[in-house]
Amino acid sequence: MIILAKIAQVSAKYIVHAEIQIEGVVDRPDVIGAIFGQTEGLLGADLELRELQRSGRIGRIEVNIETKSGKSSGAIIIPSSLDKAETSIVAASLEVIQRIGPCNAKIKVVNIEDVRVSKRQFVIERAKELLKNLIESVMPDSQELADEVSYAVRVMEIQEYGKDRLPAGPAVDESDEVIIVEGRADVLNMLKQGFKNVVAMNGTSVPETIIDLCRKKTVTAFVDGDRGGDLILKELGEVAEVDFVTKAPDGKEVEELTKKEIHKALRARIAFEQAKTEMHVNGEGRAERERGEERRMPPQQQRDYRDNRGGERRPMPQQQRPMPPQPAIPPGKPKEPTPKELESFGEMLEDLIGTRGAYILDDKLNILGKVPFTELQSTIKSLRSGVYAVVFDGVIDKDLLSIAERANVSFLVAMDTKIKSTGRVNILISDDL
Image (tube, rainbow, N blue to C red; front, side):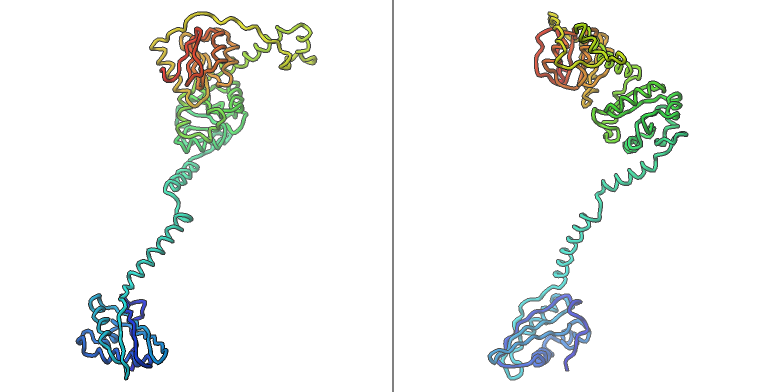
């Protein structure tokens, strides 16, 4: 009688693989009977195959036989949950079988497979696949988690302030200094970067809440680096008592600035009165240029230049404008800077890095105004005199040097230069400071 195993092949630790060659035709039960019969009593009571099967330590013996040309061949598979040594002994005992039924036979053990190694390899490969899927589609980066939590906390911190229900940070009431920005997105970015004393105007018109806030606290207006920012500053100056002004770098908005850019902009803030002077200087410069062009025109052209309906000045077509006479460049050698001036120039140039702005200084090194680099030449032309030094984030070229020489500027301080001074203007770059 064939005894079925109590353990399945999948639960075994080892599997014995053997080949069998038989000089005749036999059936599968013949082979299994020979295995049990010819190994009986060979290995002792502890390794008796029938007892091992009853206890579940040896699994079902699988025999696959094929008959061809009067000879049989096939494979024997024996699962085992014995240890390595015992399994090897049982496997070796198969090779003592020399006859099956009336036929000569030969059994050769090919290998003993460690099922746990195969399972372990499967586990490793499958784990790699699962981990890859987890990283690509499920598990977020730790920094992404931190950013998401941080953003959620900051959004929770945003509040509505005053009767106009303006977007604001949680520390507006308790802070002595307050930063005014343009919109809700600006407040969110400032909160993200750790600034909680922020409130937004929420539009171009100045709310009553902002006007009241300006009376009670020290206020810094922080606007975008575009024309809209200039218009908001002008509006604020007309109705509120703003103490300081700063702007984002040209072409950027407060909502897209990094923490470093925000700190840099706030360090470079200027008094609101000074900002008003700068805006006045720029406006007066343009008006003065137009008046000068008109005075140089013949009477008929002057009449055509004015608007017949209101006397408003209109720009003259470029091809009709007469070229102004070029004043002579004053002679003399460049003035040498004092150590104090070098130190001041260096600090100012460092403040301007990345802003594309320019400081215009008097002979006491007081800042007369701060203008964008794109308006620097026209501003120097309009001032004509009283400019002692110009410090700017840019490169000195021939045109700027020529204008500075005509305006009797003593120092041009910039990041770099394309030319060398041939007159009385002393050119200083960052390497000199």
